[in-house]
Image 1 (cartoon, rainbow, N blue to C red):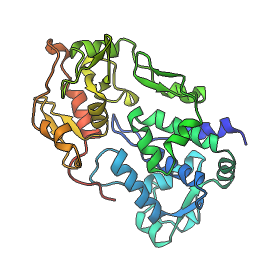
Image 2: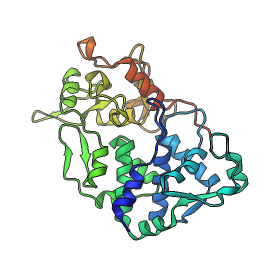
Image 3: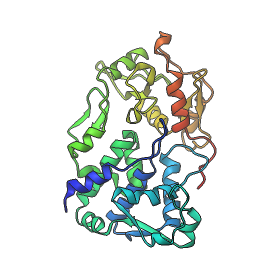
Amino acid sequence: MNADNLRDRFQTLKVWSNGDQRAPHKPLLALWAIGRCLNGEDRMASFEFVSEELSRLLESFGPHRQVVHTEFPFWRMRNDDVWEIDRPHLVKMTSSGDAHKSSLIKNNIKGGLLEDDYRALRASPDVCWAIAEGLIAAHFPESYRDDILNAVGIDASVSESMVTRPDLGRDDNEVRYAIPEYEMSRRLKRHPGFRPAVLKAYRHRCAVCEFGVHMENRLLAVEAAHIHWHRDAGPSDVRNGLSLCVLHHRLFDRGAFALSAENLRISVSARAQGQGFDESLGRFDGQLLSILPESKDQHPAPEFLRWHFREVFQSSTSNST
C-alpha cells in the first residue's frame, strides 16, 4: 500500500462549495467509513443505513439546514476515488447526474470504501488515524476533534496515542499533531498577533462570563475564538474574534449560543440542556456580552456574526433527511 497516495485521496475530497456555506457531508461520511474499518465492520452498507448515520453526524457537527441531502455525498464520493456503490446501473438519476434518494432506497443500494483501500486500512490502523486527524484538521475547529472521533466509533484517546503532540498552544492556541506535512498544511496558521490583540481588546477576560483567572501573571483557560471559523476562511482580525473561557469557546464553536448581529445579545440554543445548563449558559440568554472592546472599531463585525448564526448556531428546529 502506498500510504501517501491513500491519504492524498482522502485529503483532496471535492467538497461542495457555494460562497461561505459549510458542507462537511463528505468528510463526515469518510470519517464514519474509516471508523467502521477500524472496528472491523462490514465494508458496504445500505444507503438507508448510511443516510441515518450521516444525518446523525450532520445534526451534531454540520450547519443547520431544513433539508439534508444525504444522497449527494453517498453518490458523489465515487468521483473522489475512495468510495464505491454496488449496482449503480439500477439507480435512477436526476437531470444533473445525482441519484434519486427513492431509487437508492428502493433498490437497497450499498456503498463503502474501495475494497483494496479497506483491506489496506484494516492492516494499517495508524494510517486510518492519520487520515481521520487530517480530515478533522482540514474541516473542523480543534474543539470538535474528540467528539467527532468518538461519534464515528474511533476512540479519541487511542487516536491521540498514535500521534505525538510536541506543541500545545504557542501563539495560536492550537494543538499540533505530528501528522504528515500535507495534512499540517491544511491547518491554516493564524496570524501570530490575533490572540494577543483579541485578549487585550477584551481586557483578558471571557466576554460572556468575565472569567479571567491568572496564575503568576499567566492567563489561564481564556482563548481567542474566531467567529467565522479560520478553517472556513475567516480572517485573523479582532472584529472576527471573541475572548472566551475554554467552556464558552467550546459552546460557541458547537453552536450552543450565538450573538445577534444587530445588538450583540446572546441567543442560547433551545437544544442546549442538562446539568449545569442554567449556571453556565442559560442565564446569559438574551443578555448583552459582559465585556466589549472599548473601541467600537474592534466590536464583532455583523458579517462574521451572521455567518456563525447561519452556519454554526444550532436552532431549535432539527434537520430533516
